[in-house]
Image (cartoon, rainbow, N blue to C red):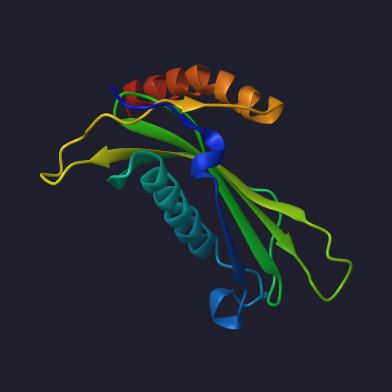
Length: 159
């Protein structure tokens, strides 16, 4: 049986500077770049939790709450919010900061992704359960089954 891991063990933080090539004609970061950053930090977080290679199974939702501009600093934070047998739900937040002004952290983006652990033959393998510790972690964890049910219902819907 796999050992349960604390949420804090896989928590991952990355910092990125928004540069001109990362932005559109309004000097705001391209949403696609933010999506790539989110996918990368989710993969790192899931690999830390499972000690396995992982693949992205889904991105449940991405809310672009506010924009980031050239010169802003992005702080990405990710944590395993719940687990299935072979899958891990990763919660990612992105905050932007203008370090030349008041340095106020502003929520830019948040997202839930599902990552699946893979073995050497690219087959899904079991992952450790996750144990929340703080009040915030417990709230995130307790909503995991509802998010999973929504995900499954969404997959049933024909497009």
